[in-house]
Length: 253
Image 1 (cartoon, rainbow, N blue to C red):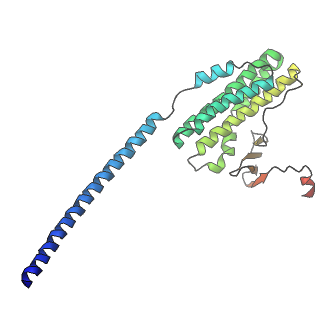
Image 2 (image 1 turned 90 degrees about the vertical axis):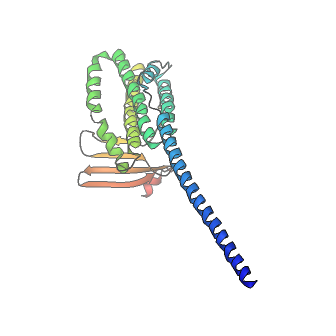
Image 3 (image 1 turned 60 degrees about the vertical axis):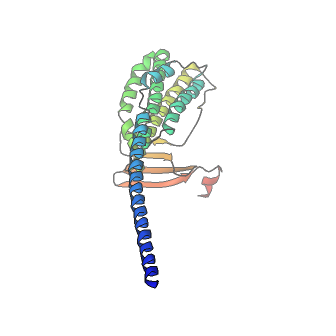
């Protein structure tokens, strides 16, 4: 009787062990299938994101929108140009991937380039005698836009976000030139109420044709600015600063 009981226990253990092994095998197979399914799903999602990426060409649309600006003053024109820029920058900010964001950055540049050319055409109408000088100056300046944008974006040179930062700084160079032309036109037209719709210390200062320059760009933290004073290839000063609301602050330095 005792032997039969031991045998029964052993047989039960063997049966249970077999059942457990069967369950483990089934679980491993199921996990394997889930991993494969997950990988396929991820690949499908990546393909879907790639297919949904916004690669539309907005060249003609942007030109039509800039040419169609109807403004009562040059200040108002700059406000509306900023609104068009914000519209396309919103596309960039809503990009699903960094690659798409980098691609969409070009449209902000085009907005301000087209606005710059629009204002240059207005200068032709208002000051035809000096138009050739304006064009020559613009063409000479434009050759250095890439180097200025590159210098202002150098902090991000090795990062995946670099193309986006570069495009932004490139766009801001055209915006800066558009503002300069608008200011000149305001003087020619006698628009005494002319004012810039926004202002920022950020910019490229110095002779862009030479190696000495000052760059001020937005810092990583809100309200801060990255500053680069490039004296020559062997001398450069870098730092971070903020804007003081106390006009007498400099007296205590």
